[in-house]
Each structure stands twice: as structure tokens, then as C-alpha cells.
Length: 354
Figure 1 (tube, rainbow, N blue to C red):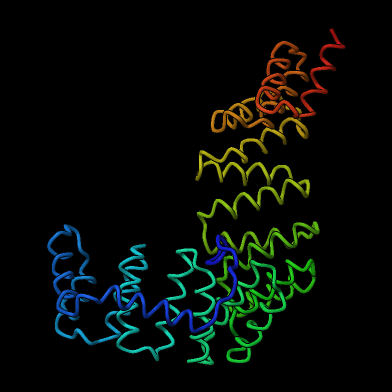
Figure 2: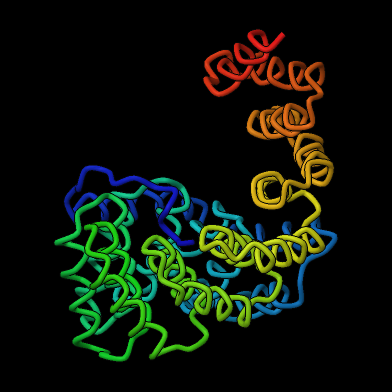
């Protein structure tokens, strides 16, 4: 969901280390001088078969304006979007050599540090960005998100509140506040913050998903509407469709659950969990064992090590008094996971019934 979820917090280093790192990069990347930079650009153009028009225009502009920091910054962002991080680092370094006073440059630099797992440097770049522009809400919220995922909620809230002082209507700030409260197990405040987020932005997909999760955990039927709102925004979201189906299932609305899971399978034939849950509903609630078997079998086809599906199918066979096939499936569970206790118990029961 979010930009910083895959990264952990590194030890904070001083701002002077950040500047020295940047300057070292500048020295290495520009040691051959501006003429070499231009020639490298020409070389890249000549060897690339599919250079985009946007990149061609930027290259052409830089040939005419080799001292234009903003153009280097634009090309750095272009490379970043294309996941060409080495090239992006090179261009942002050149931009900062020409002009190190632009807050936006440090924001882009922080993005590069994050995706290359240099989280400590990213934090310092964001702090420098805010020092240069004390109204930079984007940088504040990136720092807030970083602190959230290392569970430093007090610091995260600090930057969220800073952002809200600049813009009290910022939907992402309220979303981040909700995520902090969720982490702190304060469900009521988490829901309230998420509701404020969607009041500010009625197209905020992630906020609707979180509202659904929070309400579903409390068996609150509002969860259904929140998931439907998420689907309204992204009708192809397998996440939202699955969550809606599971919500119906947990609330005992079996027919709605089956219909929702069926819609999901039409979009994503590889949804093993949807097949499994359909199997469970047919087995437990409708006693339609053959239908349940077909869905458990499909879940196993998608994931041959889906131990719960083997167990579900075994229970179906057991319910049909097909002891042989039930034993085969329960044993398959133990072949996959020797410590799977339900299958151990089921096999003992089958042995005792013989």
C-alpha cells in the first residue's frame, strides 16, 4: 500500500554526512566534465532502440542548456519512474551540484534513497527538504509514514500534525493518522480518522479498504458498504472483492458471499482462497459435498500444497462416507505439514471407525 512498507529504519546520521555523500557522488559522476556528460547522453541515444519522446526532448534540451538544474531534475524523475535508479542518481546529483537550494531536489533524492534501501539517508534528505521548505506537506507525510512503519508513533504523529497545520484538508494526513491509531489498537479513533480522510477525498481507495477491515473486525455491517465503495473506485480490485466476500461470509450472508466470490473468480481464476471459501460454505452451511469437493480441488490445482484445501476435501469425503478418499486427503495434509493437527485427529477417527 504504501511507499515505505518494504523498508526498515536505519540509524540516523548527521546532515553533514548527507552532504558529503552527495558531494562524493557529484565528484565521481562529473569527474570527466560536462563535455563527457553530453557525449554520454549522445551515446545513450545512439544505443537505445526505444527511447521515449519525453526522454528525447529532455536530452535535446540539456544539450542546449547544460547548466539547467531543473532539466536534470526532470530527467532524474523520468528515470526514477522507469526504475533506472543509477541514471536517476546521476541526474539528481548533477542538479544539486548546480543548485543545492531546491527543496524538491532533496525530496526526489529521498525517494531514490528509499528504493535503494538507504533509509537513514532518505530521512536526512527529507529533513533537509523541510528545512528548505517548511510547508512541504509531501515530505512531512513521507517522514510520518517512515516513523509509522518502525512503530515510532509519537514522531509519526508529530509530522502528521505539522502537515495538517499547513493544510487541514489533506486526506492523506488523516489516513496516516488512522494508520497510527490502528497500530496503537485505538479502533474508534482509527475509524474516525479514516472517515475524515474519505470526507476530504471520496475517491480514497485505501481509506475505504482500511475502514472495511476495521469495521469487519468489529462485525460492523458498515464494512460491507466501505468495501463496495472501494469497488466503486476500482471495480477490478481483487483485494476489495475478496474482502467483501469474506465479510459476507463472516456475517453469515452465505448467498451474497458465494455471489461475490464467484465474481472474483471470473476476474481472477487463480484466486485459490475464493475457491477454498466457496468450498467451506458449501460444506458447512449447505451440505453440498460434491460442489465443495470441486472447489477444494480447484484450490489445490492452483496451489498443490494448500493443506487446508486437502483437509476440507477430506472432510467432504468423510461426510459422504467415502473413507478411502478421505484417508488419502488427510494423509496428504500430513505429507505437506506433519504437524497439521486436524488431519492427525481425523485419521485417528477414521482408524477407529474401521
